[in-house]
Image 1 (cartoon, rainbow, N blue to C red):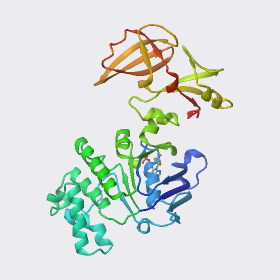
Image 2: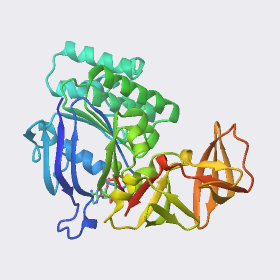
Image 3: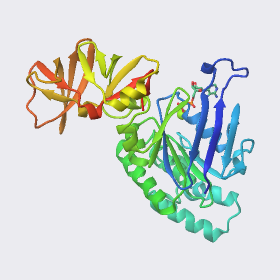
Image 4: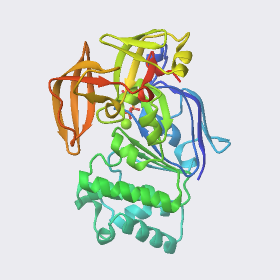
Length: 361
Ligand code: ADP
Ligand code: MG
């Protein structure tokens, strides 16, 4: 196992990159601690696979360094990095048996038959593949093939880290949940460094201790699921995490107030102080669950029109119109539904201020 550090890593697939938009990865500085369970989360095309391939050595970055512990491995090929990587689509030998597929990475490294047998059995057990060990891989379902692919990633005990690139994409939803649990169990037992790439927030938040959120080739925040939820450092994190995501309302600052069209909200002193000298545009951010809904006007209450009500089991999501802003509000199913005219309140402690997309903090 190893601690993996990326130092000012940037990557462009173009031969002569000129401006920032020519880079698939822009100046990434991050440390993956030894034994951590990480998720790399972001929309399609944001650079997740590029980052993973730089960590494994399939790609050499245009700029920057990759360290395993204190060793510079930037120029080393994957074979010399001791990494296991599981790809989005199964990579296996169709003509070989399931056993031989799982044994392949171990035979490759010259392990003795007894050790190989033991490890293959263990991994097959974890992935419920024991009954299939003698079958040829070719005849198996897409799910089973991807499980074999996962197994090939998990079979070696001597790796620096295991990298998963959206490994459950082709797996049906129920089995997906089961396999994610299995991966988490394996992590807890073996304390391997795991980096799990996904574009699915639920997958990231349930699997990882820490999540790295990426957006357009940049690392926008690394944090625990709770930190990403409570303290999104970038607008994109607020919007991407949570369902529905955070509300953002354009505003301008006047003294200790944020003035939006239709509303004026008092900010705490600390926020006001930190906003001084910052360049806008400014926006207020608040999670749908933290907005209060009232049936009558009152102090700090802002009139809204209720446009839509969606049932989500124990919650309801209201879509409300506040002057020209459309907001989402989450209420418990026990609360009587407000009428078409309602009032909302922004509790001060839950208001975040964003300047040019970044948290003022
Ligand atoms: P993700 O895995 O998050 O979907 P990728 O790392 O695959 O994103 O891609 C990041 C960006 O780099 C995208 O704009 C993609 O089109 C581009 N890209 C990826 N691979 C290549 C390649 N081999 N050649 C040129 N551009 C690429
Ligand atoms: Mg990808």
